[in-house]
Amino acid sequence: MSLKLLKIPFKNLIFLFILVISSSIISVYPINLIMGIIDATKAINKDVSISIIMKLGFVYLLLQIINSFLISLIKYLATNYQINLEANLQRGIFEKLTKINLDFFSKKDTSSFSNLIIRDVDFIGKNSLEPYIELIRAVTSFIFGVIFMWRINPLLTSFVIPLGISSSLIIRKVSRQSEANISIHRNNSDKMIKVFNEGILGILPIRLHNHIIDYSKIIETSIFDLKNSLIVQRNLEIKSNFIAQLFFMSSIGIILIISALLVVNNYLTLGGLTAILMYNHMLVDPLLSVIDLNPKFIQLKVSTQRVSNIFDEPSITQKSATEIDEIVTENLTYKINNKSVIENLNLHINKKSSLAIIGKTGVGKSTLTNLLAGLIEPTSGSIHYYNELKEISSNSIPKLSYMMQNEFLFDTTIEKNIRLANSDLTEQNYREILEICELVELEKNIKNSSIGEAGAKISGGERKRILIARTIADTNASIFIFDELSSSLDSKTFEKIIERVESILENKIRIYIEHNKLIEQYVDKVILLKD
Image: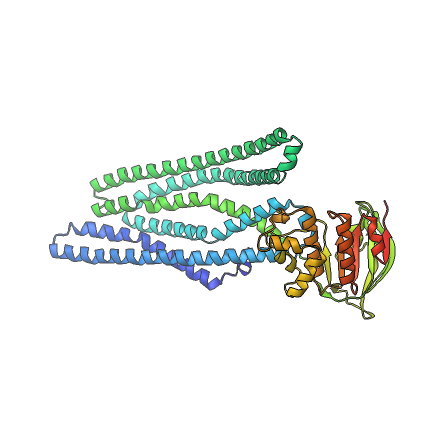
């Protein structure tokens, strides 16, 4: 992901990393002060000894105070940056999703895809800076740790470094196995979420059709796969930690033995021995930090790749919506896999007219409607839109309000679901729409309550009436499309609503996709599609 996407000021990053490097150097520099303080105790002149100890001790305390301040400042800045980064990423990815071709979503399992993206964005946001800060801290501490230890005793340092390098190479090999398994584990986790979600949403048919035992086997398989990948991951982490601990304890033992022998042979001062024993971790801890960070970087790589794939999806060309009062098609043809769904259709629809497209499921009713609405492009032929006898630009699409058959309802109140189509809807118009769609009583009963996710707390007929209300609430639209308006409605309710809809929208273009031939008596034109 680019800095532009995450909106990180480059100079702020440089400043933050300078703070990290400074803090890392300050954290290892006291090894020199400790050696000087201990060696000063052996000075012949007591006054000189006290003076050196006091000066070096004061510098040691001052550096510890400064470093504590720097660590806190780094944490504060990194946390604030990451909070903003996560918010920008959430905003950016939603904006991108609104511009992607709808075919992208038709290939996805909506629930699993949504959960996965939320989890990835959350992980990226919380780990976009801190792992890199820790890596810079580890590398800087190790480099300066080597420099300071080398100045104390090169021989001792030369024993510790090869042990660290060999251990790091072994751990890297284990990490590659871990990287592959993390991807497998994430996929198994996604499958598990999907199976559980479907099991919860489909609990009624599972019970009614006595499918509990069979579906339990599906759950059990998902649990088994997830458990196995988790066990493998834990084993790899245990293996990595074992190598790290082995290196840590071995290095302490080697440092202790060699440094003691060097002191005995006068190659190392007592101050040097004390300093090394107190700060031997400055060569070990950075390596351990890199080891601990590796799983985070692996997960960050996987999550970033998935999010980047979304941003790499081509965006559709955004066309401006404009008013129209006439639709004309000329030899309109649409093919799927070289098979004609719509062929050589010539049609003329005027303002103040209504059209019903009737046919069985799968004959192309929705396809024709999407063509007329400008949502998809024809294979051949053309569609022309006019406003006051002037053809509108090809860079424009008609203003339309479209009630899709399985349109989503949000987990909020009836009013907010309806006003989604028109936030400027007046209270009077809102009340009129409730009456038109037979929703007055329902809205009164659950006025301030949510209708549940996808309208789960209300009936199918009530959901349909809210969708109709949302559609006609978009008063700025030129074309109103209703996909299966009659479904989930009894004949009496359907007749009431269709008459009222035709009346309130009489000055607009109305298109109805229907299998119910009762619609014919309410419209001006009928297109009957056959297999």
